[in-house]
Length: 389
Ligand SMILES: Cc1ncc(COP(=O)(O)O)c(C=O)c1O
Image 1 (cartoon, rainbow, N blue to C red):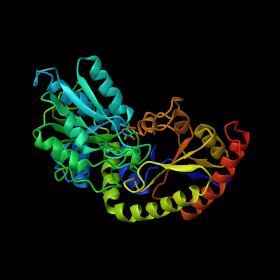
Image 2 (cartoon, rainbow, N blue to C red; image 1 turned 180 degrees about the vertical axis):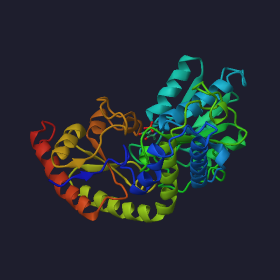
Image 3 (cartoon, protein in one colour; image 1 turned 90 degrees about the vertical axis):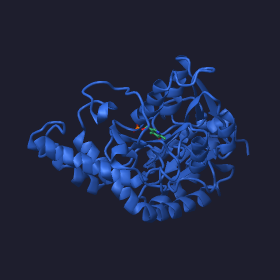
Image 4 (cartoon, rainbow, N blue to C red; image 1 turned 60 degrees about the horizontal axis):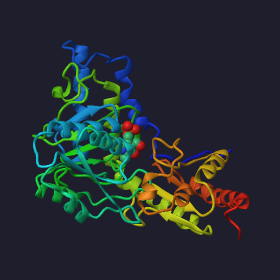
């Protein structure tokens, strides 16, 4: 049976060039990067080289990159670290954080946790395409606002947010600005200086790097409290023995992501647009997310009168891997908070499915999906009491 993996927003295969870069650091150059002997120094040199590559890919300086164990930790470190550090700075009504209604749980749950500790959080709504209005962010700023955290691009519907405009607003109001760029890295050109970003989260496994490693860009001069205490690695910001192979892999993945961005982007956009135009020929099917301001690899549909979950299971039986719900926690059965935030009814949200393409997706893969999806949708509708055509 043909197998087609269209779940790259959930995770990607590790690129062969990344594996080749990492391999020596598993069994040959295995020293602890904090040790002073040659084994350690070689590992430390590789880590610094990777730091430089990651920094370059977002227009930062190497000393502004801190390594973490992934996107979730980067988000936690940015939000808790800044909030705890500035807890007492503004005192009128207690510290205030601004975020959006469609963030990944790594951001939303962290904000909810802060609320329990006395922080106030404003959740900015989005329009029907998932786009946030920068004016709403502007209007939400109070004297107590210490942090704005808005994702660069949404993991479910692929909508790309107006980050530079939000960065300008944050900068003008002297408020720190964090963006979760986990889905945007390698797909959208990012320049943290031009976009006035103070903190930015990166995850390796979404960009053809290994799982369990990430980075947080922290603009020079921005101070935050650590959330992991220990041996004082990364200037005390993030303790823990360096994951040398993982970090080397992340560095290589960022370098490749920048080099291949325009070629991969054009390739995926072409395939995605073909997928979208063909699938929308299915009766009562709709595109979720912004028609233009969306990631090159994202096609998110909803189909009247069927369950996305059932569609996903039946497509899996035909060798097609897609996703419902959020990239990381698709085992949840509640309607997606992102789709509800677009104004969809729970039934519409439940009737949705995401296809996320990758750099190795082929024309043949898309042809197969275009052939199979309408048949499976029709079969499910035949069984659906809600479909009485
Ligand atoms: C937008 C976004 N942020 C954060 C994360 C979490 O990253 P990680 O899996 O590296 O913890 C994900 C993963 O799906 C994501 O899509």
